Amino acid sequence: MQDNFQTEDFGFDAEAAEPKKEKYEKKYSERRFNNKLVRFAIKAGERVIEQALVIYYTMRDKDTPKKSKAVIMGALGYFIAPLDLIPDLTPAVGFTDDYMALMGAIGMVVLHIKDSHRLAAREKIEKLFGGRV
Image (cartoon, rainbow, N blue to C red):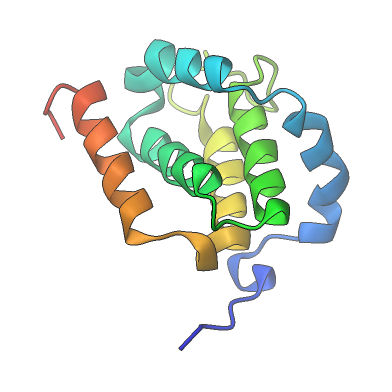
């Protein structure tokens, strides 16, 4: 049985985000995503990195629809972008906007996230954080 989640249930306005998604979708690349993960894993924290990885693995899944992949690329592009609403180097709150963008994307693609995506993200987190999680 498939749940009928709406993006409104997550407090996210998909139509308002549509033009911004395209702007940041262009900033996404595998190399830049991996570089950001390695450079900012500790500073961003486990929660932010894990959500980024969950949607990253969802995007890489051949079963994920193209529209969902575009949403994910937009969120990951925002995560990668050096200029954010709140700069990533700002102590304590620097990744808040990145986290919100990731959570908005998760809300929009939640039906395509599989247990295998969450498991792959968890395994990568354990490697990145050296088993401290």
